[in-house]
Image 1 (cartoon, rainbow, N blue to C red):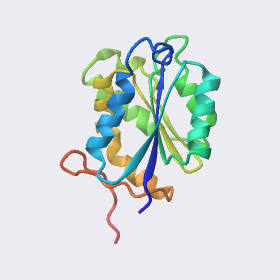
Image 2: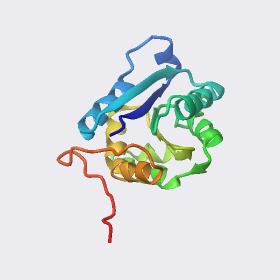
Image 3: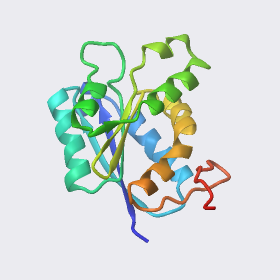
Amino acid sequence: MTKAKIGIVTVSDRASAGIYEDLSGKAIIDVLNEYLTSEWEAVYQVIPDEQDVIEATLIDMADNQGCSLIVTTGGTGPAKRDVTPEATEAVCDRMMPGFGELMRAESLKFVPTAILSRQTAGLRADSLIVNLPGKPKSIRECLDAVFPAIPYCIDLMDGPFLECNEEVIKPFRPKAK
């Protein structure tokens, strides 16, 4: 079985400057460790809120590092420097709007400001790129909502088979007829 490579990108000027501990990137790693029982390797980076840097990082992780899944955190709000969705759209071959729709719907159960979030997802070659919000609590809520579809999406792209701890998260894979 092929070990999955999963890119984790924290987009934040403060985090990349070393001003604070990157709780968001660590939250993604913690959640994935809870979800996944198959072996996986994190390709982890903290980068500034600059569209060209975000694009170059996503391209490198997808094209050169072989990440079948790339999860970003941060840069999805309405602030002028929040350009993660634009960078994601610029590097993707096809967009997967259902991911952002579901994440916003889930977040609206907790905060009315979820409508300000611009998370999205898309496909670049053999990689699924998913933008998450920047708060660790919101990361968990959003991943709980969308992750059941991620292993099957990776399957459809001929990526590594992601096995999950079904007591924590149950992936959906259609049964063969």
